[in-house]
Image 1 (cartoon, rainbow, N blue to C red):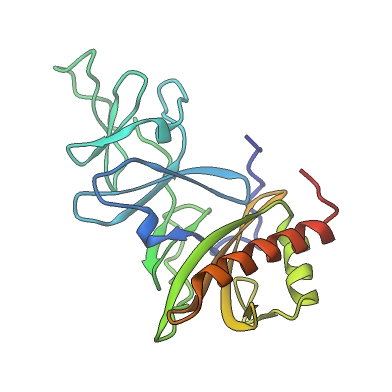
Image 2: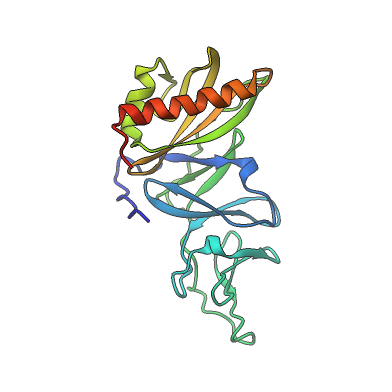
Length: 230
């Protein structure tokens, strides 16, 4: 696991497009995600609201993505400690069912929101001044294609996308380009120092097999430009 990068003044308040909303089902398994090297556990409450937490149980530092959602709480796989949605406070310790867990026994959480079919998160404190994630809705008649993992830094990926004719739209996140000659979009996530995720979208009536093949080709091209770093 890569160490998370320091959150500097330049990245405070910045929203990261973690994954498509459809990847996080209610009352289901906990999904792993990364943003700038920070390992995250993503899941939904019973009410359906997304939860973005540090992927570490405060008890023994076991990854919470190994656990499961039980009765609306995230339960660690190691000793079954359960944490409430939204507050992330421990509410149950199976070895001591009659004891009330300390109020300060909580998982570290991150501000998150669901917008435009994407679960977004900030890496700064949830108590930081409230902001809204960018709105990049699916254009009418479009659909999510796939999430592409690229073995290259976000900087190298941006440079390669520009080289291949893609253009950023109002920032570093949304990129407009083409797959197999047809219009496409990519939401760019800085996952780890040498891993970038591209959430790709295309027109619904497109030949999806051709779009998937073009996406794989795009990944190979970006990684080739990056020198094939692992």
